[in-house]
Image (cartoon, rainbow, N blue to C red; front, side, top):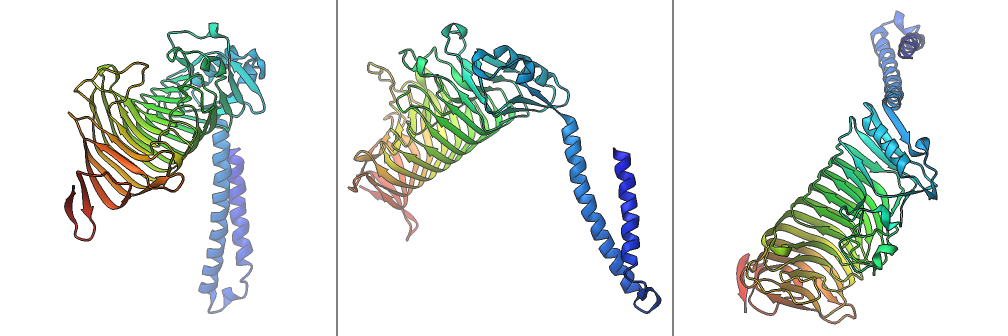
Length: 449
C-alpha cells in the first residue's frame, strides 16, 4: 500500500508540473520567462503541499487503525441484556486488552445493559489503553457477590496512560444499599487506584452504592464532562472523591447526589475544579480531615467557576478535633449560589456521629484560604460561618468581593470565631468585630473593632 501511494504521488507531481507549465507556453519565449516560471512553480508546489497534507492525514489514520486493536466484550460472550451475568466476559476482554502490545480499546457497546459483579481491572498494561464505555454497566444487587473486605464495585488498579470515555453509563443500582444503616460495607461505583496520566471524559455515573467516582493515589488526571446523579436523600453518595491524588483537574461536570458533590481529602495536592454544577448535595468540601487523631494534609486547591443550588453547604472545609497537619493554599472563586445553606463555612469542630465528640486541643491547621467573587442567596440567616479552633485559629483567610443575601432578600449575617481575616473590596456579610480589612483607596491595613 505504501509503495502504491508513493508511485501515485510522484506521477501526480509530474502531471501537475506539466499542467502548470502548459499555462505559460508563450511566456517562456519572452522577457517574462523567469517570472512566469516562478508563478508556475509556486502554484505547482501549493497543490503538491495540499496533496501531501491530505495524504498524510489518510496515512496517519491508516497507521492509527492498524496500530489499535479493539476488544469488544460481546466478542467474549457478553449478552448485554441486563439479566445475564456478564462479569466473565468483561474479565476476559480486559485480560486480552491489557496484554496487547498495541494500543488497545476495551469496548462496551452502546444500546445494551451489562450486568456485572465486582471487577478489578488490574494493570500494569503493556500499551496505552482506552475504555470505550458506550453502553450501560449495571451493578448486580446480589449481596453474596460482594466481598465485605473490599469496598469497590468497578476498580481500575495501576493502569497508566488510560483514557475512559464513550458517553455511556455506570449504574451502581444502589437503592438496595441505601436502605442499610451501615456506612462502611458499601461499594464505590468506580475507583481509579494508582493510575498515572489518566483521562476520564464524557461519562455518566449514577445511583452508586456509596461514592460514585473515587480517585485514589493517582497522578496527572483530567476528568471532564462527568455527569453524576443520585437522589438527594441517598446516604454517603459523594459525587467525585479525591484522596492522596495530585495534579488533578475536574472540569465541566454536573453533579447531584446525597452527599458532597466533590470531596477532597488527605494527601491531595494541586487540585483544580472548574465549571462545576452542584446540587442536590452537600456542596464542595475539603475534608473531612483529622478523624481518629489522624495527621492530614491538603494543599493547593482551586475551585474556579461553580454554580450550586439547594445544597446543604456551599464551599466547606471540615476538620475533626484531635487531628493534626494542615489544609493550606486554597482558593474558592467565581462561584454563584442559590438557596444554599452555609454558603461559606469552615468547621474545625466537625463531628459526624450520633453522640457528642470529645473536646481536644489539637487540630488540623487551616491557613491561606481565599474566597473571591462569590455571590448568591443563603437558605439561612448565617451565610458565612468560621467556626475555628481556639488553640489553632484559622489564619490568612481572605474575603474578596463577596455578596450573599438571604433567599428572601433580607441581609445575611456572618459568624466568626477564632479567625484571622482580611477583607478586600465589597464584602457582604461581614463579621461583626475584630476583623482586619484592606482599604483599597489608601492601601494600608485597618483594624475594625
